[in-house]
Structure formats: structure tokens, C-alpha cells
Image (tube, rainbow, N blue to C red; front, side):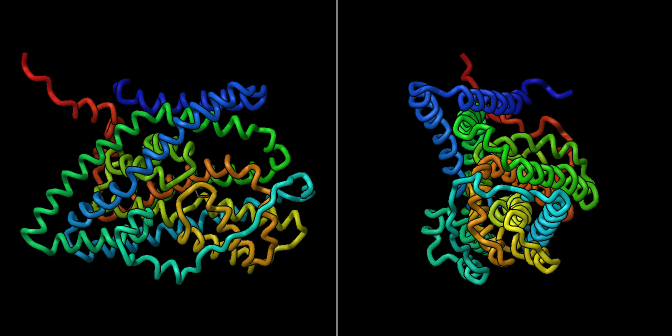
Length: 437
Ligand code: ASP
């Protein structure tokens, strides 16, 4: 049976989320008053939440670089690297295409947006251009790896780390020295990640309270059909598609997987950023789910960057919603175009809050819908962003498990152990032993 101690942190994070929602909604409904607003919402909670997100982001670049170098050197040959890359990429594209197809089908069934009064929302949106795919490919090779790290350009960091890792393997005894250093660095950085995870209840509480205090739930009402259709689509992907794929392609127990997803899901929900969640995703996939570093160190940062199933679903439902509001009929070709564009659009965009709206511009213009339509859904986007980021991150973890299983780079005993990778345990074991008195 699970020791209660090892699940304490997850329980605390869940309680922090629920308490944050309750307090945030109450503050919004009854009004925070100038004092509470200044000192609590815009003061204390703002500082705690921002410091928490910054601390997470602080770990992303060193963690991805170091663990990817270590991961690549653990591979037996270069062919394995190519295979893992091809499988991960293929599954990421496939899950996104499935996701947007589910979203489009559900949205055409429900028909959100019929009879919607566009005058109800006053927000405006001016589109930004997403980069074309060719530019994304060119930009993958950094001209300066230090600049890539300074800017947190994930694809460039991945490319440099892969090449560096291969060179370490091929450099004989000298490479071994470098590898030893990177192995030690990896352990130290993971230790820092675990510190941040222990602070999660406070960070999550601050972020969520503040979001709900400023959002309230009233804005959902006029857009309830859009909101609920997308929520249902995301739930189908989370509790239908991924479990099915895990069972069929990986012979893995979906329930165990979903239970282990609680920590990264809470981080994704409160930060609305797959990028900021990378440290927790990587920790979970490696230490709790049993995916070996050779796969996880590559599939997780790659997934956080290019795999955005929830975002693609939002684009599918939003396209149908906007078409309905403007009374424009979508043809079958339009639907196929949406699937294609939404799938490809997720590759070239950063894993940060609200970026899905930018790529939605691309999808809408592909099918000839007015980009200004985005203004209609902007009001509820923050909440949906939190939910779709959970889906995005869950997709990354599911694909990582499936690829690792197929590559024999998977530790089933870790996956089956409900207490594996517990931060409480890790920190306790890491404490220096007391000198004998
Ligand atoms: N916030 C999402 C993510 O980081 C992207 C988006 O849908 O806007 O995964």
C-alpha cells in the first residue's frame, strides 16, 4: 500500500488548486476591495506566483541541455536516435491530427456560435503572423548556441545538444570525462527541480487565486457553448485517445498513467505553459513513469515545443464557432485544411500562454474566415488555455511512454510502483547524513 507520506505533496497541490479557485471566485464575486486588491491580489499573490513561474523557467534551459546530452550518450547507436526521433515526431503529428479531428467533429455536431450576438464581446484582436514552416526548419540550426540558450529557443537547443551528445560519445576517453561531468550536473539540476516541486502548493495557489480573481466565471456565460464543446473535446482526448493509445500501442495501464499525471497537470493548469512545465514533465516521465533518459530527454522538450494537441483542438472548435457566428458554411475541404494547418501550426510556436491564439490566425486565414473573429473568444481564453495546456503536456507524456516502450527503454517496475519518484523520498534521501556525535 502507498505510504501516505509519499503522496502528501500531490495532495497538497490539489488542495491548493481547489482553494485557489474558491478564493479567486469569491474575490471576484464579492469584490476584493482596494486594500485586498493592492496588497493581496496584485501584491503578495502576484509576487509568489511570478517567482514560482520564473523559478520553473530558470531550470528549463540547463535541464534540457544537460539531460539531452546525457540521454544521447546513453544510446547504443545513432540509428536508435533516428528511430526515436521518427517515432516521436510521427506520434506527435498523429495525436494532434486525431485531436483536431475530434474537436471538429464534436463542434459540427454541437454547432456552437449559432445565434451568438457578436456585439456581446467588446474585445478586439489584431492578428500576428506565425512563421512559415520553411523558416521553422531553417531556424532549427542555431547560429550561436549561447544565444539560443539565452533566448530559450527550444528547437535550437535540442539540435545543439543532440550534436554535442553525439560528439561526446565519439570522442573516446576525453568524451568520457565530459560525460561524467554532465551526469553529475544532471543529478544536481534534478535536485533543484525537486526543490521547486516542493514549493508547488504555494505557487499553484497564488497563480490560480489571482487568475480566478481577475477572471470570474460570469464571462463564461455568453460563450458557454464554445467553452463546453471545447472542454468536452479536451476530455475525450485526455480520457479517451491517450488511454486507448497507451493500451493499444504500449500495453500500459491508462489508469496508472493518469494517476501519475497529477503533478504535471497541476503545473500545466496553473502556469498555462508547457514550456515552464518541462522540468516537472521530465521529472514525472523519468522518475515516476519509468521512461529512460535516452528517450525522455528528447521526447519531452520536443513534445513541449511541437506537440500541442489541446491547442489544435481549440483551433478546431474556434474555427467552427467563428464560422457559425459569421454564418459561413465550411466545406469538407475546409475541414481538411483546418486539420492540416492546425497540426502544422503547433510545430512552429512557442510553448507559452495564449500562443494558440496567434496560430489560430493562420488556421482562420487558410479557410477564409475573418481573423477579427478571435476577439469573440478572447475573454474565455485564459481558462481554456489552462485546460488545453494540461492536454498538451499529457500528450507529451503519453507519447514518451509509448516510444520508450517500443524501444525497450522503459522500466515497467517504476511505472507500476505508485510511490516511484516521490519528491518527499528523494529529498529525504538526499539530506546529508548527520555526523555521529
Ligand atoms: N499555453 C499552451 C502551452 O503552453 C499553448 C497555447 O495553447 O496557447 O502549451
